[in-house]
Image 1 (cartoon, one colour):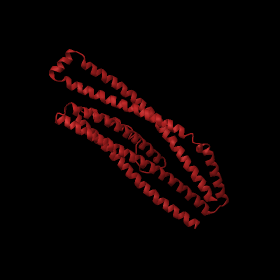
Image 2: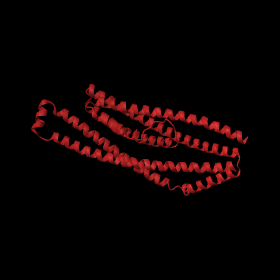
Image 3: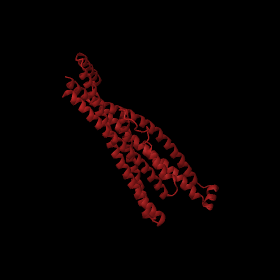
Image 4: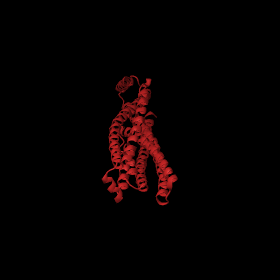
Length: 315
């Protein structure tokens, strides 16, 4: 009887965990959407300001004429263009993330209509009450101990599932970051050609084509990192100790990379800075995944110990 109740409870717990995970993801995405909307507005205002600054430099003025004669005009214009381009890249990335999150929220709303989740809290309360009554009527130490062991095993199963999903998301993030690094390597090659070998029109066109591909790769890495962040928050929900993941630690990844790409005046040094930031983020993901793997192995060992205790009681 107790085993049957435990099986029913485990099935309900599995469905409740799935539903709660979706609800947590919905809340996290709504918060991210609000935050990205604020950032998108800030970047758009920055873009408008920088565009005006560039326009001013293109207008005739005695100051601009003086700067041209002294060789400062091109230097100032390049700086303003760099700031304008960085603002535009971050604004476009924020817009793409808004679209991605809106699509995810629509899918979540569909998931929440799952018929298996209707009245699930009431069903859970009913089975808990039935289990308590059974244990109370059969007031044996073995029954109480079995109930505790079954509950502990159920919690471990949930933790293992969340860790596995986080590790899968981490693998996707690693691959996305590695691909972004590859794109940056290609762009660096063309920037070296253009900087040191004169490159010309063809090299410049290839270089900017590579930077466009890199921008797309960075966006995909940003999406993967945000998914990884969400999965890590789910793991922390089930009390994994010493997993140090700050909220939002991966969410502004793209902003920092775009700052790197467009902050320096030399294209070659810009790409080098971006590579460094992507590599640092990749190392952080790898370290976190390694910690998750260790935790998973620990839960497996603990589950084996619990299984032995259950077998000893039932045997």
